[in-house]
Length: 429
Ligand code: MN
Image 1 (cartoon, helix red, strand yellow):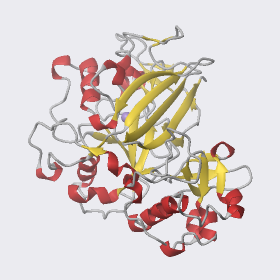
Image 2 (image 1 turned 90 degrees about the horizontal axis):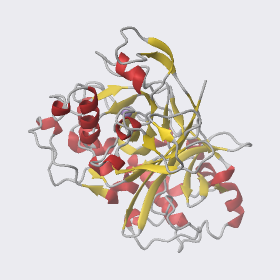
Image 3 (image 1 turned 60 degrees about the vertical axis):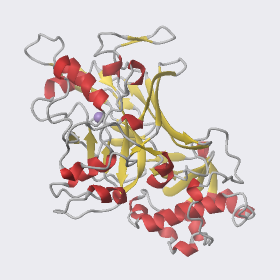
Image 4 (image 1 turned 90 degrees about the vertical axis):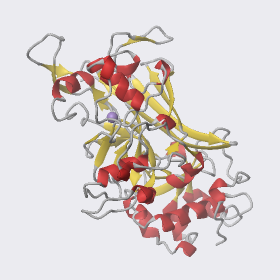
């Protein structure tokens, strides 16, 4: 195997696979996921252009021989065991795939008998949840989002609580109800105050169903209980990222959240994109984060020049039943005040351990302008200023039949690396 240490950042790379212009799945990406077909059980895969790449088939035919990885590791319903091999091995597989799909490489290109079993058009397979998620944490790391929410629910003059700039606020969420893109959402029922001045709650389907545009990091390495992960080593624990929709019921949330935070307003379902885009694929798009203007405790300090944020363009589209989808938000992951390294350092500073397959979601990603906010709560100012879509539909919050589509990609110097989509449609009950 010829190793190409910098293959992923080699802008001259091209593939013998016909990759549509503006595909999220360029040869620079090579994400990981899990698919199944009507005939075969779940199996680990990658993607290039419009093709799913069956990693088990490639392993069985000795294409990963030099990485010393057996086919069995891919014959699973999740990527956990593959990820647990560690970055040295998983990067070797990704680099090898880049090599195999490069135009100048003929090993797989010329072996046409393998194509039918290893390559599938993406529309012919079903993607499943790519990891077995142990624990899930949701941060609250966008200053714009925290400010917007604080101003609406508490005090516009003191929108951020005193702790906010000193630590990345988060809560522990629910892993069992995280589902893959395309899974329909049943409108949840719960307790809420029907009118602002009610003194007792009512019970019924939420009247304030919302989405939250987020990215989630996938933990790629176990840490030890009792040992904090230092901020400068936190990168080693990030396998990759997913798009994340943290569906939320705002009326249930505002009634239940005092004093311990969100519970049933969040844990009914969260949706993730099927593809984990690796930290290595996103490395060329690292950028500086916003200025952090208070003195941080040493364990959260990082150099002002370090590139710890990611320039990832994000979009939310809303499709009202029977209509075309319409873009209702464009924002960027680079706006996040707290970066992922600070999140990991903070999460473990008390000795809390993390495990392969854990998710840490960013919190709603909002930018500085009205059209860059990552929730309807902010976009409609809690329903006070309803959104009017081009087709005339009006929305305070999500209605039955609505579909939320989130997209994300990074792009620089003609190289594009993207996530595809995470979608979900709301079903009444
Ligand atoms: Mn959230």
